[in-house]
View 1 (cartoon, one colour):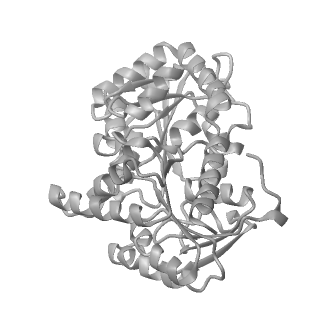
View 2 (tube, rainbow, N blue to C red):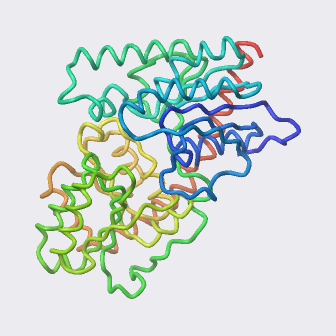
View 3 (cartoon, rainbow, N blue to C red):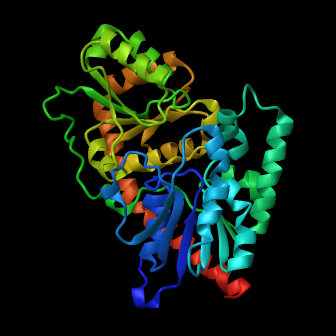
Length: 399
């Protein structure tokens, strides 16, 4: 992306979030970096939370105004009020950006009093998977529709809406002229290192199939993947390595299940490590052959996640849900992975066996994925679309 010189700065962006950690993969690694690359001065207002980074990982080019908060649902409900109060103390702002619907609903009033434009990043299905995590039991359809309409009204009142994919954004602002898709493509530094596996032989592992699962959680298909490993014949267990990441949001029950299963399986078949900073993820991924996107149906249908493009950048083949049309479209068009039912441990086991039996084919998929990433899926194109939409919005609605 062509950067704007600092002495030609287009202004000041204030990121306002009620819940996102300051090292959030989309908001910090991609969107905030795009703002700064374009020459904007950036202030981050949000809770004093980090995903897997230490304080040293904070950007030296961004100002942070963090407020203390807990992790309870009540603390989360208070987050929007805290964030907006803190945002009022920030100096002159040209753009108010948020990835949170509770904050987005308050941004127009904030901008009316303080000036500036408003930008809402619709990064997931809030009335779908997010509501499932908050509502006790199964949310009634009337509750879902109420929340969807409320968020749709918010989208109509802000100056600009960006969304991760067509299925997600269409639920709230279909055909609205102020809506732009900005996908979760991998940041520029993700594909700079050469993959560590090459020529069908992986660093002395004798052709072992190495799979990375991602964050261990119930909605992420962790239990189904574990059941699939347990059901594999012993010879396949010995020749497969699956890595999972334990993060702050991983439930204790999931940690216990992973630990117990790892002890029962052959040594090295299932491993779990603490989460690592996003900046280190590229080098970690490059040690694997296959990346899993093992979402269940409630999350999988609308998903077009960061990890697909990060797997591509690192040279991995991808196993993804057959019920995720946006992901499947890319897997099929590029020939870089296999789609299957991740709600079925038997289907997962079958796919693992196929990958192990066709390891050369899998690694060729990874090479193809990496090539496609550099040709068609770098973040620069999305960043340019975002900055151009902001410039066009300012011109159309006046400065």
